[in-house]
Length: 166
Picture: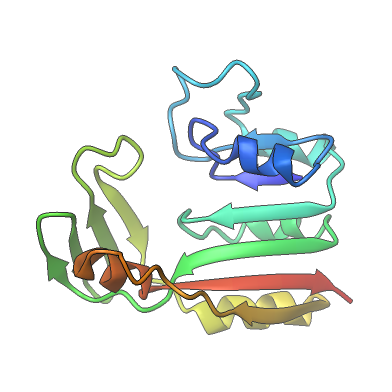
């Protein structure tokens, strides 16, 4: 599997538990100076073109159309993206939305202290994938009823998709 946006490898144990034999963890934006010993650091995402994988996972990573070439090599694709951002300022996080960008600041979390993404048209990206032979299924996620209200609000701004090559 190819994990785009692996950061320091926080999801690595999940992929191992799902019985993936080969896990390629890359992050196009994050400086991996201090990463786990079992993560192979690839600073140049173009190197991924030489790898074989069946699944691509992109979780909470700013969209880049360059990902399409990597995704099209796989049989499956799982994507979590911010589809419905709204301005919000609370103790847990600050989210500022403009027509061009989304700025998310989560204090005390090294991978989300200051994330700036382009405001994307999720349906447009899904249409691109479907025109390349992908079947899309939105995954409905039930959030923990014990979440703080602000965390629940942020969780609801994300959408979860599973794609299968047809």
